[in-house]
Image (cartoon, rainbow, N blue to C red; front, side, top):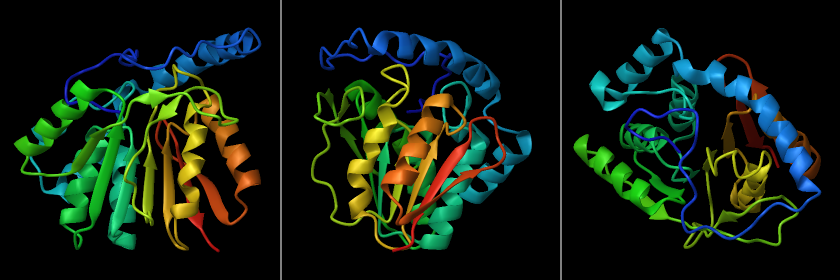
Length: 247
């Protein structure tokens, strides 16, 4: 989730989410991960190199002020460039995004410049969804943005998950940039509920892959989904896990 406005290290509070406190067994684990994750957040404040940001703006053919204030808990310019790489290479018909914001603008713009394709973006904050919709409209971009409250699940992954609805049967590109890590370091692992919808050659992009929690997620996905090739891509401050379905 990435806003147009400048933000700090703390994510937006979860309003209207489930009353889902951690069990006493989870508390030491969560405290440990929170302590070791802060250095990764501090390292990501820049939002990417000037060269990556310049390349991003040029590839989108948008004014520089259309993407202000990258950094902090936002997607950085290298991750956003990687989204464009996949849109250009795959020319997906269907993209689903978990966690809206700058990546929504970038993906929708890249799709419009590369043969079209639909984008559905989910986020847990209704006011944020509307603000993002207005942000895109300011730049002449349209997308299907949806409010998806966080709900309890029966998943083996800890934490709540998006109440997803009306999903396409096939997802050519899945972008995972939410829910926020503050809910639980492993919370994004539940994105695997969508992996069966990804066709051969389709891809997953997980942001913040250098963080300790996301590294555990990657390890578990590699074991549970041997029909995907998962790669931790080098470069940048936040890291990207790329998964490509091969069979």
